[in-house]
Image (cartoon, rainbow, N blue to C red; front, side, top):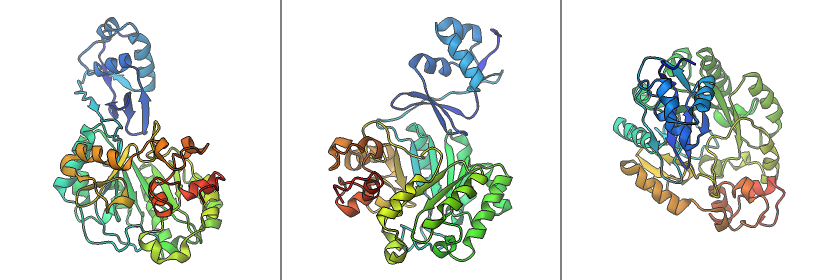
Length: 392
C-alpha cells in the first residue's frame, strides 16, 4: 500500500448528511450509507492528507480505504479538492422537480397542466433554487415543464449547473432533441427521461408524428452517450401495447422505465375517453423496471424527500399541488418545513393505516386519494393493484 500518496474523493462523488451519513455517486445515482468513522475518513480525503496519516488517525481506516479505492470512491492524486459536507433537514429534501416553463410544443390530451401559459423561470430564480437545494443536501435536480427545451434561455440556465454537486435529469417529450441539442446536453445532464406513451397509440395522445420524433430524439441522446430513461402514462388506447413497449425499452437499454396512471385533472378531464378504468390500470403496474426516482423512507407517506418548484418560484408538494404553494424559493428551507407540516404524514394518520399493504404502498398518491375520498384516504389505483376492495 503506497503510504506516501494522497487519496482524494473522486470527482462525481459528494458527501451528504441526510438522515444518516452518505456518499452519493452523482453520475450513477448510487447512495452509499456510511458509518460515522467512514464518513469522517472521506472528509479527510481532500488531497492534503497522506495514506500514512489517515491510517494512523483511525483504527478502521485501512478496511475503509481499501474498499473505497476498489469501488472508485477515492483515487490517488496530487490535486487537492475542497470537500463540502451538505447537511439536510429531517426529513431530508433529496429531489426537486423544477418546472422551468409552462410552455410546450405539444398539446397532450392527458397533460395535468391543462392549458399551458407562457410563463418561464428567470435566471436568478433558477440559480437561487439550485443553490439552496444543494446547500440543503439535495441529490437530484429534475428539470421539467411544460417542455423545458422551449425555455427561451434554456442553455443559459444549464451553464449554471456544472458548478454544483447535483445529479441533473431532464424530463422531456423528446421531440426537439436533434443531434446538435443532444451534443450540447451531454455537457450538462446526467440523464434524460423521455415520455413514450405507447407505440401505435402514442400519436393519439401527443400529436401526429410525435412518436417518430421522440424515438429519433432518444437515438440522438444515445449517440452522445447520455443515459435515457422512459416514462409512460397508461391510457385506454395503449393498454394493449405494454408488452411491445417493454421489449422496445429493453432493446434500447433504457436506464429505467416508470409506469403510472395519470390523474384525472387538466387536459385529461377534458378527454375522458382516454381514461382507463382503475381495475385495468392496476394490472399494468407490473410493468416498468429500474429504481424509483423519488421514493419515501421511514414511516412517511409519498413525497417524504421531494418538492416541486413552479416557474414563478412557488414551492409545492408536487406538480399536482402547484395551486397550493407552501412558500417560495426565497427561503426554500422554510418552504420545505411548511410542506412537511401540511402535506407529509406518517402512515398511522391515513384512513387505510390498518391495511396489511400500508408499508409497501405508503397509501399511494395523495392527489388521487384527495380526488377520491380525501387527502388522508386510500389511493384507489393501488387498492385495486393489491386486491383491497374495502375502501372502494
